[in-house]
Length: 310
Length: 218
Image (cartoon, rainbow over all chains, first blue to last red):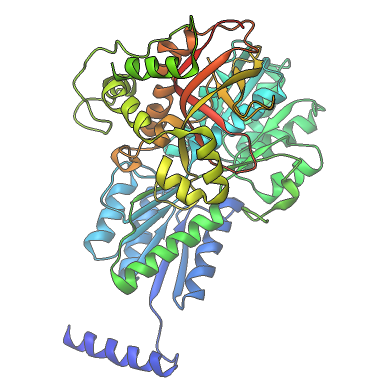
């Protein structure tokens, strides 16, 4: 231990002189697959902020596999990371992995998804999904004229965000007795699955008027299937605020989405990690909600990589 | 029963002769269950029922400011208005939720929509100063978000926290808003104790009531 402290002293002295010959502290950023631009954006947001603050970064993906996530946490521990920024692979399955990191002395700063335990991670910074889903639900009801048959595409069940968005939608939509849900299926946040599900749902229910989706990639899949079937009359509403959906909104395809401030959330997690590393100051509140914003043709042009430009 | 006294004062204040009083009291005095997770499964409706009369209404009575004062301070300094009349969780990207007492006249009403609202003129210029939700569909979670003694940290996850927020809206609808008149509202005097999120000072406040009195037809 003494040797390590001595070494740290040398590193500190060196960095004070301005040298960068020694490795900087490491922050591990672990997210689901970057195939979904949402996860790519938050990983990049975290990386950019961490590098800007002088850290080295390893960026890893768990592909929504809790076992893989556990191995990646081991990797972060073995590499001596000073903090982990994590968008996790399941609200229950992740508790043990975060605990393992904590026991190894590495604090975790969760983004986007919650875990069903508090006091283990130092921060859980998540979008106010319920507030956002209510905005999306209200816009959907308005676009539908408060009536008609509709379909709901739900996200991955192990992710609390799938349930909370669905609840937010239904707490609004179910107030309207003339809104009739004819099918509700999970497409696991996935574009290709949403395309296939939408094709078969449409065959069974040609008389639908709208589709409300738990995220943007599924909305893109559904929109593509509807377009292929010549049913561009059907209203699609998404959730995330991706550039793909922004472009679709601008071209009159998808009608609305809900922006999650994902880029900022990732940066905020790194800022809080940095504060903890430097001063041992934990965030004031572990669970932090950030409000979402409705995106329609009127403000879509201001949207860029999960941030609304002023 | 504190609201009854308060209502009487309000009645006197707006000098209504035969005002229709909508009681929010008569809540069974349940033990305070607390809002968080524990051994028993979380029951949001029971939690709200248990804290409504002893904690929620008194909190609004204490912190709520006269509408014009709240609006003017919010326009000048949202943080000052928030500290004095409101609450927000300490995370970035969360707006203040302000508590206010509104006395005015109904100048517009949308009772066609399930998300019914009334427009209230406070300044007497015939313009809408505040829009008040009267349900059955009630938007947002303003009542929950105004309460400084409620924290997201005390809930297992967003779903429980959301259900808790929704339970306040359900409660106020069934206890109060359901009994309000829905016809010929224009021109009636109205008194509201409620909360609104300060999303933008340019927006007309969308107020969720915890108590409301609508006067007789003029």
